[in-house]
Structure formats: structure tokens, C-alpha cells
Amino acid sequence: MTVSLAVVGTGDRGTTYAGYALRSPDRARVVAVADPRDAHRTALADAHHVPEARRFDSWQSLAAQPRLADAVVLATPDREHAEPAVRFAELGYHVLLEKPIAPSEAECAAVVAAAERTGVLLAVCHVLRYTRYTDEVKRYVDGGALGRIVGVEHLEPVGWWHFAHSYVRGNWRRADTSSSSLLAKCCHDLDWLRYVVDDTPVRVSSVGGLHHFRPGNRPPGAADRCLDCPVESRCPYSAVRFYHDCLADPDRHDWPLSVMTRDLTACGVTAALRDSPYGRCVYAGGNDVADHQSVTVSFAGGATATLTMSAFTPGGHRRTRIMGTHGYLEGDGETVSVTDFVTGATVTSDTRAGGADAGSGHGGGDMRLMAAFVHAVATGDRSAVRSGPRESLDSHRMAFAAERSRLADGIPVALAEPVRIG
Image (cartoon, rainbow, N blue to C red):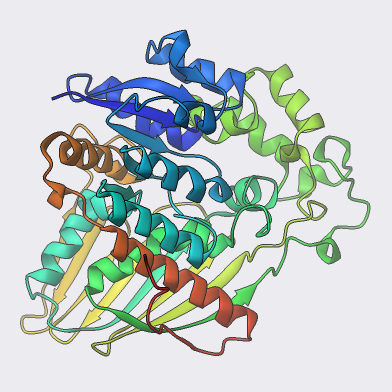
């Protein structure tokens, strides 16, 4: 069976997930597209040969039709997740939903309730669960090589340029128009920690805030836009340098450059620097989300996990240390090293080799998620999807609790019974 897909939201994530149909046309095909942006909608629809009659300028226009596909890939902005997710579930579409589910706990619960009420498959894009690296970590943990897990340290090194691009200048710069940076960037990581520890989170505390990207740290003489700024050449967050470097590197055209402009020329980049949010001074952008935050999660079985999200790093894979009673694991997103406490020996494995998905996003997780979702829709066997709606809700509840704790100066927040569903 070839699974038919409707893609709602044709930005970076929607285009990435739709790309699975180009890689595996015998398994999936895109038959409808919805997005209010003409250029984005046309580009994706043309790539998949979607007929004009199935190109829609809003999700509402698509939802007004009889069901046109087996499943919908929902990759709209964060605050436009809940309503379409509920509606498409009611129409009988299986739903692949980009994270986060929604920016509030009540909306998240409403989406989960809709999936359970209608019986459709809801898969949230927790792509880190699907990487070969995660498979290797789980192999050691579940196989008992570490004994009982006592503690986990986990770093999400966002990267100084990535944070400036997405969370200072970009779509996730304000919590009131998107979500907290922790929910937007790290519900991935909280879900991964829950998956690896394989236990119920019971208490969360967090500290952090907006340390650097605010007006008080603006260099003397800095202009509102990098093109006009006399100190731009000395600024680590220069948009002029960063986006022109992206233009010179074809690997950075699809992302992040295409988020800024679809005109991938020097003139196009300069025009975007002049007119778009991506050319603004990072100290004058009106952003308000945390740029450095630490979270501590306590699990029912006694293990603790700490997550640090920081803008002030080089970009790269997540880094993790797992401390167990019989062994110690250290991983960098590509290699996994395990020290056995009996022998003292350390064994290192490299997860980069092999697989047609190795070159896809998130260490292959993007395409392996799509493969699992498509298989589940085609066969009715949902076991390939590694996180059910309730587990996904757990990871989001951790993020909401962490943000409440952060705003209350780190006071721990107990994870009481979830918001009632249904």
C-alpha cells in the first residue's frame, strides 16, 4: 500500500518530512498541500506534482474538502497546531504532528483526546527516538550494561548562530507568539530522557533566563540593522557575515538560509538583511525567550536527569553522560563509549555508518520517523511509532513544569496527575 499524504505547512519541517515521499515513492506520495504562502506552497507542490485543484491557501480550505489522503503531515507554526490537529483527526486523517504538540498543556491534552476519541494514529515528531545513535544507547541501557541508572547529564548545544537565527531573529523569538525556547527546542530532549530512563517523571525544577540578547548588552554605537552597523565586523552575531557565509556553502541553503529568503543570490540575501527580521541587531529584536536554561528531572524510581540548553556553544549534536551502578556511558550524538565497572574496559561504537537515512536530518531520525509512521498507517501496526500520545504529553508536561519553576526562581514543581483528557 502506498500511503497518501496531505502536507500542511510547507516550511523547513514540512518540506523535510514530505521529502520521504521522494525518497520512497513506492511507500508514500504527497497528494495535497496547504500553506498561505504562495511561493512555499508552489515549490513543494511542484516538487511532488500535486494538481492545482489540491493546492490550498489554508488548512481550513483543505479541511473543508472530503478527506483527500490517508494522513496529514502538520507542520504549521507552533500556535497553529492544536486546532488543525483536532479537526483533521475528526475527519479521519492519521496525524504526523511536528513538535511541540501545542504551546499550552490544555491544548496538548485536547489534541491527545481528539486522537483517542477518533482512533486515528497521532505521532508527534520526537525524531531523536529514531536515530541509530539512540538505538545504540538504548541497547546498552536496556541490556543492563550500566546496571540501574542513577543520573543523567544531557547538553543541548544550540549554538550561538542557531540561537540568534531561530530564537532572537526568527519565528521562536517570543513566547507569546510561539512558545518558550525550552518547549520549542527541548521537548525533543525531555522526551529522549524519558525514553532512555524509561520511568515516570515526578518532579521538575529549572533555572535560567535571557542572559545576553537584550538591549542592555548592546555595544556602544550599534545600529538597529547589521548592514548599517559600525561594529558589525567585530560582533559574533553579525547577520551579514553569517548569512553570506551560508550563501557560500550549498549545504546551508535548504536550512537556515531558505528560512530567511528564497532568493539564493547575493542580492537576495542583502535584500533580506535590509527588510526581514533576520537582519536585525540581536540586542534590539524584542525577543524574550531564555537563552540559557538548566532543568532537573526526578523520576519515580529515584534517578535524576539534568538538561542544559544553551545558546553559548558551538552548534552540534546533543551530548550525554549516563551514570549507572555497573557502568558509565558517554555519547556525543555519533559515538557511544561505555565503561564497565567490573573490567574497567571502555568500548566505543560509531553509529554514523550505514543506512540510506544516514544523511537525513537529526542523524537520520527525520526519515526513520517517516518510515515508521508510513508503515504504521499502511499496515495498522502502530508499534513502529516509538512514542504514543500519552508519552508525548508527558514530555510536554515536563517542559511546562520546568518553565513554571524557572519563572518561580527554581522552586521544584511536582508533576501531579495530568490534565484530564476527554
